[in-house]
Image (cartoon, rainbow, N blue to C red; front, side, top):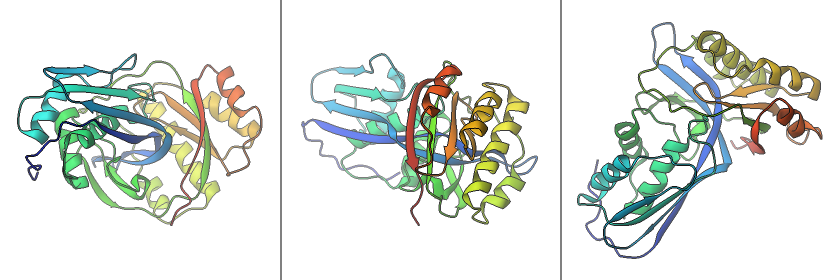
Length: 282
């Protein structure tokens, strides 16, 4: 990783990094292959960071702590090369461990406050991998276009554009931090083959649903079946899930989300229900 410039002006610095909402696909690339994923970017969920000059070093994260003090210190030393100082404030708009990229987004937001020069996405991914053992592709401008290996922190290929979708979703219970050593995922090589052929919106919803169902059978966690059943009644294309978290949502044709969709998910016990659009850019 290239060393950052040595100057570090004592001025307030701020940054915001968007998260994601589960994965459209996640699993093994063949029975013994690497764990790969196709993320679903979510601009309405983000982590905001602010660094203020001062003596000593303090980390404030409010009611949703994402990083440990040790991670913040290691991040500082990695990008600045000296002892940390000042006050670093992080505010996560998503529940930690929910499958919305809180930890990667927090590291990237803090990094953008602390580094004078912009690090290349590959260097950012390597730093996230070193500090958390796995990462989401949030350092890339079009993360949904990348076949991502989260346990290696690198791209394995390019994907076709994601058609425009509208999602209504929430979180099914408290989250849990991803275990970087966890590779017990379903084989999704066949689903990925279909995905790489740029499927239409209806087929895309079916592929995301199949990925969620296969991994639930193998791994347990929040059951997508009740959400999927509600989605059928609401005209959804399918379900999207966090394969290592609690995010669950329904995928719709943009502009065709019926009234009552959010209320239906709340009725199933989902919290922090949100609605957002993704994709639609070539």
